[in-house]
Amino acid sequence: SQTIHQWPATLVQPVGSPLSLECTVEGTSNPNLYWYRQAAGRGLQLLFYSVGIGQISSEVPQNLSASRPQDRQFILSSKKLLLSDSGFYLCACLDTGELFFGEGSRLTVL
Amino acid sequence: GQNIDQPTEMTATEGAIVQINCTYQTSGFNGLFWYQQHAGEAPTFLSYNVLDGLEEKGRFSSFLSRSKGYSYLLLKELQMKDSASYLCAVRAREGANNLFFGTGTRLTVIP
Image (cartoon, rainbow over the protein chains, first blue to last red):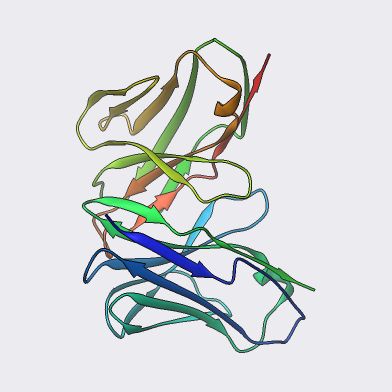
């Protein structure tokens, strides 16, 4: 079965600073990978998905970008964070029809 | 586009039964999922329905009616640890089988 690792688990960043969240997946190959964001009191919003290396699709226009340099690595980035980027970021992997989530990264932008 | 609705909050008593409803309108349908999410944690998978009818798994059951765009999650013999948010998600045929989530229902179980 697959395992999803996300880091860092928690971070506090000032407005305008860069961001890099990393996600790696074990136990599966060529997975569909996803980045979701959950703002306080709101549902999970799909940000990006990837069906393979170098293939990124964005669901909503925003201040963030994603990259997939390796089959089981998915990175979420920003060059300049905004206050509205605060939230709980979840990496997910689609395996045998089911979506599995990493532990999440809680970002607070001050 | 996708539109998924569920109640924001519910309260139920320990030992009782609670039903959490979810209605959806999506451009293409390829299955409906229920997830449980405790505060500060990642969602965990509960159930999956792709055909009409009831799927039972222990104390949890999920029902789907595709013609009505409707699902419910039924929790029996409620325990205090069942206090959590319950997320309804629909898998669309577009994209990479993306899952689109409702805002979740926060369930509080009281003694």
